Length: 122
Image (tube, rainbow, N blue to C red; front, side):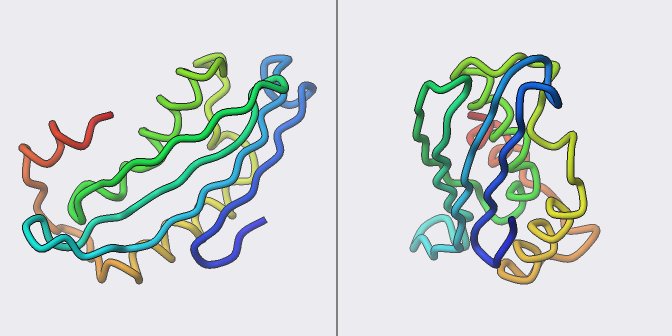
């Protein structure tokens, strides 16, 4: 279920490598006086019934890689790497990307600061 600033997903065992993965992503844009616009993400959920919670921030130019970070965190908490969170129901993820692009004022072709990419690779 998607609504601006929030995505809730439930992926049951028969859909994903025999695992159950339930998570919520809450995101917003925050202004940092030194870094500029930052995407702040709070992720809560369960992998096979084990709860977890994580928070992270990404620079404006690297924010569109946030599902890469989400996948790493899910794997850290027990999700099998073959069962990434963006495999099923792709249309909801497209809506999340569009929402983030609108919130950040992102456009195609915006250059990436490689130092941001190194620092934001959680």
